[in-house]
Every structure is written in C-alpha cells, then in structure tokens.
Amino acid sequence: MGQTVPVPIPNDVFLSHSGTEKREVVSHIEQRLAEKHNIKVFADYKSLQLGDHSPTVIEDAARTAKVGLFVLSKDFLQRKWPEKELRIFLDRSQRGKNLGVKIVPFFYKVKAWDDDPSLTDEQRELLDQVSEFTGLEKTVADFDAELVDKLAAGLAKLVGDIKALDPPSA
Image 1 (cartoon, rainbow, N blue to C red):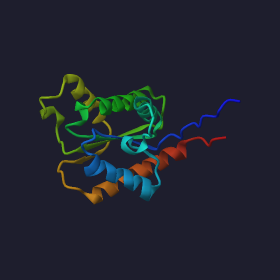
Image 2 (image 1 turned 30 degrees about the vertical axis):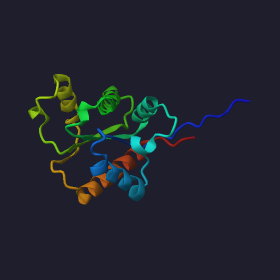
Image 3 (image 1 turned 45 degrees about the vertical axis):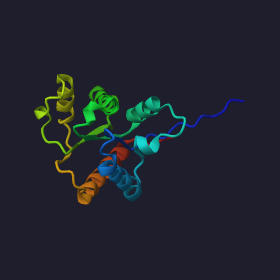
Image 4 (image 1 turned 60 degrees about the vertical axis):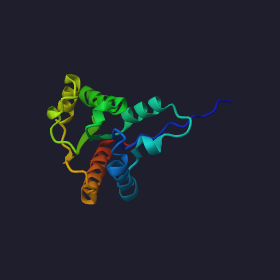
C-alpha cells in the first residue's frame, strides 16, 4: 500500500528579504503576524526543515502564498533568491492567474533606488514594477515597534480580506 504524502497548507504571507534585515526587522514582523494575528507565515529561516530541498520549498511557498511582503534594501537585489521570489510574485500578479495575490513592498533604509550606481537596468526595471504597489517605507535603521505593529495589522487585514473572497472548500 502506498504512503499518503501530506499536501502542505499554503502560507498566508511570504516574507522575502536579503537576510541582513532578519534580526533588525523581519523576525519582528514574522513574530507579530504569527503570534498576535495568527497568520501562517513563510520565513525561510523558520519554515525550512532539515532535509528540505530549499529551492523547491521556497519556490512552492512563493507560488502559493496569498501575500508577498518584500523587505527591499540595498542588499535585496544583490542576492539571487530575493530577486527570484519577487519575480515569481510579479509574474503571478501580471498573469492574473491568482487574483488573490498581493504584493506589499517595504522599502527599508532606502529612499531612491535610482541613486544607486551599482544597480543594473534590469534591477531598476524590477524595482519600478514593485514600486507600483502600495507599501511602506522606513529610511532609518532604528527599530520601530509601532511601524512593525502597523505593518502586521495591515497584512493581517489584507489576508482576512483575501480569505473572505476564497470559495469555501468542500
């Protein structure tokens, strides 16, 4: 007899970051969403299990989450995976295949990407695309619990609105 493989439940929010912001802000957002709002969050540093094929798990989570929160920093586009995750969400959004998908940019410690000479034209184009979505901006490095609470509450409401539109499962 074959073994039943459990189908993973899609995450509500996919947290994308370069890694350098994990301790400063990402872990606080993830904690508020999970503990205060009971939101299922995919954060690579917490969601990956021993033995997981990381690329497959990350791509699957990015393809199924309802909301993508992208912590955009100077390091974000210098890393392979955050850029790939953002492209997955932009593709889902543009194809209209997943009408419930939402992209929330969080510009962290940056104002204008255009001033950064290290960015390629392709990276500038990607940032132009993501900046068309409503998000938040935090240009200074100090921890801001009020902003984290505001962001978590906004994401929780967005997830709730999307879930309300989902057809009931049989």
